[in-house]
Length: 67
Image (cartoon, rainbow, N blue to C red; front, side, top):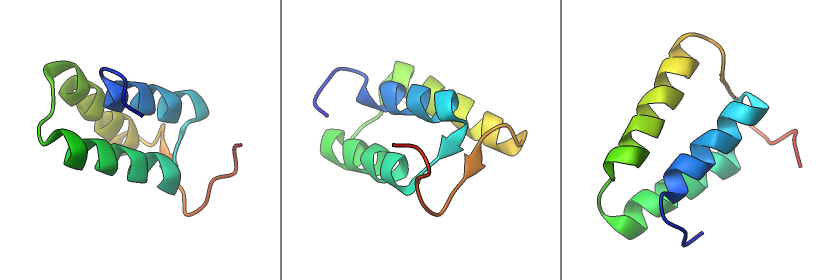
């Protein structure tokens, strides 16, 4: 995924399905490693994801149940 703000798009995907799947988490980690930094937009998206998870609105799942 080589688009601009790829992390934000991955977070949007997690928010839409209300799950952080291993696939999404791995893609986020890959992008963080590939880029070597986090843009302001992506940082804000990650903060939102973490706050939604803390509030229980997003679940961390072991396997993807959404195609």
